[in-house]
Image (tube, rainbow, N blue to C red; front, top):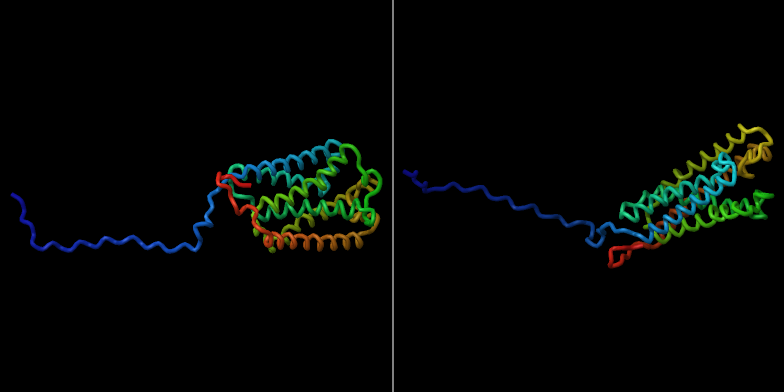
Length: 256
């Protein structure tokens, strides 16, 4: 025997409606899926190989302990590592390296190139090199051209043509100078530890305490430091003012 059906059925609770989606502040066109960039990867790999090859050639032709002490060698070693990592991320559609890393690397190789061409090899400069150091031959001439000219220009081209703008910030400029300051301390300490008369006791003429004294060397270092900071600020300003070379993508899913 079945139970009687009640006359009054209590009201069922209302089914809640789904929450309304709020409009996104980011337009749909700004959401870009990650894409591979084989051309950028190939170029950066070539730059990494060039920097590594130049450093290797210098090590084979000279005293490794002296070679590795030069700012140009250290900055190109950093460039080789950063370019190799950037090439891998461009090939695998990974996230680019932080802008502070790219900006610091670019600043260091540009500093090395400008100091070499404007101070060390310019005959009008009071710090110009003399003898074999001023006019290297053979393999050293090749490595000098690669490390002081080819790789810095390639780094600038990668920044201008293959890197999104606006990733450097003014607050990073002072942080980038920590390495040059540490390098200054290293050079002065190295010179003090080596015996007077040791070849290349001070690696750069503008840091030669034995010839110019600490007062003049510190004055040179201050002027160079201010110049390096101005260069860092200029790079940041240009990074925000330049157009975006990676804005347009091809229909194949690949881009530079």
